[in-house]
Figure (cartoon, rainbow, N blue to C red):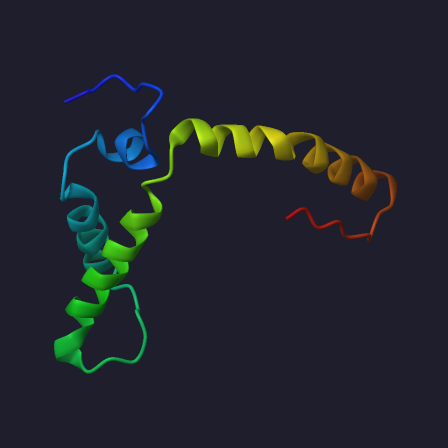
Length: 97
């Protein structure tokens, strides 16, 4: 489909080209193909659990793409500082939330 992204584009739009319903179907299919464990469910409920997990995951994809990029950009300096510190102090750990 190749819909152009605009200032209201979401992560879902970027990854799934704005096609409704497709993200959950694609994620469910991927979990099925990879035989992804979704917990200890009776065999008849594994597919239901996969579908629910896919639906919940696609909900997170409704975040505005510009907001996600801006948040990542704001972390750049903190990540760079942490990387430099750990290079200068071998064996140390730095956490960036």
